[in-house]
Image 1 (tube, rainbow, N blue to C red):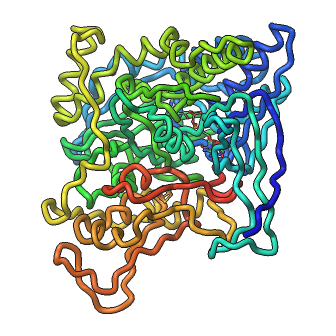
Image 2: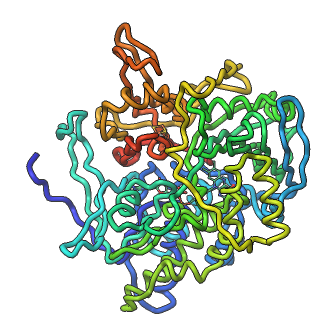
Image 3: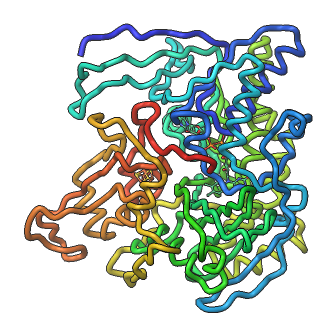
Length: 551
Ligand SMILES: Cc1cc2nc3c(=O)[nH]c(=O)nc-3n(C[C@H](O)[C@H](O)[C@H](O)COP(=O)(O)OP(=O)(O)OC[C@H]3O[C@@H](n4cnc5c(N)ncnc54)[C@H](O)[C@@H]3O)c2cc1C
Ligand code: SF4
């Protein structure tokens, strides 16, 4: 293909991702420039068709960072309308539920039940009022480097490329967004972040990042059962003692309930299906009543970080920095990362602003270490890793760590990468899941339908196998293709083109992996969990993916 000149736009700071981290950073930069009486050009690009379209969170929101960023958020109409007023923490067995004391980190007094997507939409209007340029529908596909190897911006992907990789009649080249500094705020497992981590060795000296998959539905429930401000978390059934996870159920405004299930991606059984576990959870006798007579209105899934303090990478590299969940600041015992993402965006903005002003030594990492994010994550650093010993031991250790050591135990437990935790298919029992009833529990395809996912047809698949052979020779033969089950959107399917063998018997006959990329909800789980790290999630054409309403 002949070299095509790309349009070029110049800014002081380019920000990739309009989530809480990227938007908070953009607002802070404009505030700092205004306070200094200077001008700063800031742009934010977002792969979703609009700001919020790819945002999926619980969400109980702790307003600490927002109070610092926009103290008069209430007067400005921020969508924080439902104070959390009642916390319940339940242990489920197959038929019973037991109320446990709510762990201190899960007390939500002073917090709000919100739609994070709507908060981002509101933050975007605040940013635009300050002069930030926001471009939704543009996916950053490539990091740009100058002759010295310094990051100098990003390029959006070309549009109108056919499945064969060749330009079609609708071909439009990508745009270069050049920045003196570039902040990567792509959220958990960002695709460009992954490249930067490798290129600049940002993870040298820290633990691997670890993740969970979170699945969520939004329901309109019977008004008689709706309790605005009620926050319910569960542990236990349907997961076994060795699998980390649990549910959330938040009653928000407008008669809606946000219900979700989170499972640590260090799970071992390749037959486990996070989607089916979620569906099964809703049928528990203590839970299903909430949904009877209600209507499911939205579905989606997204990975979240769980590595915490000991997995924080170096954040700075020449020409930019990582911020928010791209680096990983979720406080796992709190199940919250939006407030830390915002604060990390704010401190990144402060450091980058100082660099632009000539202070070359200003460091995002050092600024973060001085912030409350550092202290908050340090105190809870041992809780998530302790659950490797199983749920009961983890709960017991967490109580000890919280009440006795108060987060200051003289040791730090370490994290292990998620992808190498899977057991071989022939070493574990398959899991039989009940059929969905279509009222409380559903199948995957009808679920993806209400995520409003759409990708321009005809483009190359944005899920790349480094070695296509391994899909069958390793994944299928050894693990019975776990991607068929962990993908929450049914993207991966083993299809049989004729008579063939089965998993574990060394023959795969005419089996092949079919990738239904158009269904992908951009959760990034395959990029994380593939046992051979053989799957690379890259951005599809901008605007593709889910179109979440108020998730
Ligand atoms: C199921 C679930 C429940 C959660 N519950 C809570 C909760 O109750 N409370 C809480 O505080 N936190 C919760 N979290 C965590 C919280 O959602 C995250 O910590 C937070 O969203 C991180 O913000 P971020 O800005 O770093 O990333 P994100 O919110 O992921 O935003 C990143 C943005 O960047 C865009 N993007 C990514 N790559 C590119 C690219 N290459 N080009 C252009 N755009 C790109 C994405 O589309 C997205 O809009 C939950 C998370 C999940 C998954
Ligand atoms: S293909 Fe990968 S990123 Fe897309 S929905 Fe499935 S697991 Fe998530």
